[in-house]
Length: 505
Image (cartoon, rainbow, N blue to C red):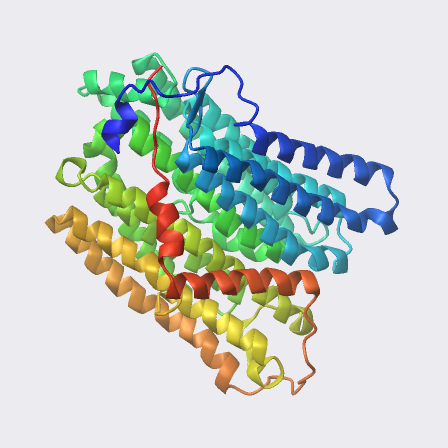
């Protein structure tokens, strides 16, 4: 893979602007503009059409991804700053499908809460546009612009409940720490640009190979990785996540825990494998320490949580640690584990999206009756909502990695990446992964025990009515989790397909 990344290739289409390659972004821009116009022109009673437009826009943007994938030609634009290859297409597809499910689980929630519908879907689509752009960004400036495009709407979405002090606190913490992380990252980018004289990642890789002994380069690499460590909520840059997830509307928490985290990993993969791979002695130990700390801290604190959303926030931190493990071992044995590491991270992201969105969606359905996400409120759920109990159990044990649910494939590809590295440090990290997987099972099983065996806290066994859109979202996610667990090739194929192929201009 690394050879193909840095090798010159003559078989690329090299138009200045390829409208087919830009079709997903163009359709997405059209959808968000249409949502804005409809919100401005229609009265309040007619604004229920905005989620339909947003959902159809995301499905419409997915169509050119399919046609580009069938075409098979990689497209290089703007002197290598923007590339549409297999990796970009897989990740764009992930973001669009994630956004569609978030809209499904948001629709009734936003309507019931009397929130501002048009603005909500406009900001959601804007953030998704930044993520789609991030998937093709191969240039430091493009990466930074995409990051800000996806982040600024997310800050506003986190504080969507304007009259809720916890929501205000969530948005403020997210915004302040996000701005700090962006500043640190941008300073690191300035150091890299000052040394390399270019912002294109493959050119940076070539220049860094000639300038290995400059200490400021290592500082620049670390600063950039720290900035994206915030986006993936890695320890010790995770402080924003629990308060933000708990204070934000639950669909927004689901969106941040899946799509925003995935965008951070997309940027990390591009930076590590395309720009900084020659600096393995810098980012290898960095990721090793961060991965071990993130898994351990996230799981240990999750054990103490009494709120399901807050528990999933710390679970999300721990899951980020599992996803960082392949990056940590990719530097081993002179980089021979790089291909396995890239496949492992992409595969994990695909499975994690279905598991986590399903878990958050089920909490939204349950909270329609309980009006709270406290774990104690789930007591006796099986007696009056057996379907939701079964769904939540599936998602929880999938997150724990229990076969035959999809989560076991995610854990398996991480262990395979460790085995492919084969060094002592990699195996030590593998042991830490195994211990943390067992620890995580305890708090996931605690929620299941509450639902299946404990009594109903208030004695109210009125059935829960699940809106059609939410039911569809839950149905799609549970089918994905079950199908991947039984037929793992469904997702491992895309994990192996998502490789970088970049021509040097």
